[in-house]
Amino acid sequence: MRLPVDPLGTAVRNYLHLLDAESEACHSTRVLAQIRDCLQRHRATEPPVRLSAIAEAFNIFPRPHFDASVRDGELVFSAKLGSFLIRLNEKFRGANLLAGKWPDEMAAAELLGRGRFTYAHEFVHRFFYVHRDERWERACALAAQLEHDPNIRLRCLKALQDLEESICDDVAGEVLVPANLLVGVIGDSLVGGQTTAVPNVYELLRQISKYFNVSYDCALVRVERAIRRNVVSCHQDLCILFVEWSDRKGSSSASSSRRSRLDIRARVAVFPMAPGGLRVRRPFPGIAVENFGAEVRQLVDSVLRDRRPNQRTGGLDLAVRLQAFRPRDRSIEHQGRLRGYWARLGHQRADHPQDGRVLLWGVLEPALP
Ligand SMILES: [Zn+2]
Image (cartoon, rainbow, N blue to C red):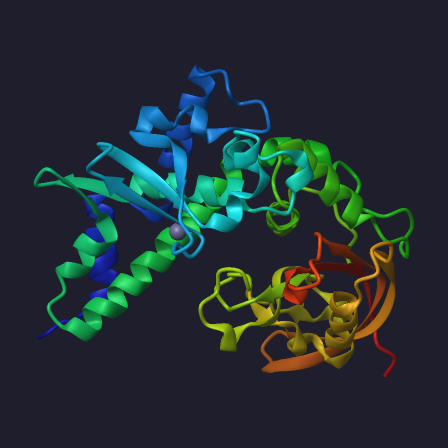
């Protein structure tokens, strides 16, 4: 009897074997532990964590190289330097270089820059390289190469890369914003005063981004994770959307080459788990805001077009559409009303209307039948 062949499963097994790991979780835990140990040895665990301080311990050149042709960031092995090199898009250079600083040392005034996170993410990619025949090779490329069929090989490579991306995001987030410290900063701030009082999410994100020196969206990704994992108390109907112009992969207008796919998308979303006894489907990052209904789209549109510098926050009361389902039922659409606030983040330049970012948050109330 021929057993059915699962090329993807085989590729993942080969990949993990190359990385000398039993599972993805095992590798990610080990990488995090290695980075933390090193930070501890360098007495550099106090936020904001600066990975450039320990880069050399992992044969990474501490200073990143800026290049306009790099999408966001990438890690390469430089034969010339004899070490790994983090390459970052020019957009992260900003005022840091003028001040003689690296993106890794980004000042609190530049909270929206994602340079620090991108640096950390590329840093983590280092742990997915293996040394073969006197060369550094990406484990995902080596694992995919073992597949003979070119189409399947490509599919395997893509799947392994996606897996690696999500691990790099998780580890980078945990290094820059450790969950145990985050819980302390959040405290009771997401609970709200009474059942209808809306927690001040904007103020909380401001505090988190200042303390850990990360962008608001990075802060919100960590908050979302803490809520999902039930490690913080939270208003049961709290709803948060972080919205910006980007392509599906999350590249903003500045670095996206595929302009056609640019749209106003939610990069991070927090939705109540069970409004009215329904289970809400977690929206995937990069979902177009249109999917939440016309009123959400209209509000975000008008906020992004409004350039009045002092008009940065306001109230909202919107119909919101959610993908939800009842137990043992097919997916249904659920209408709710979101009552809360919006805040415009970042400095919008007149010639770059797509630079703006909008945070919407509030309490989701069931729509009247
Ligand atoms: Zn990556």
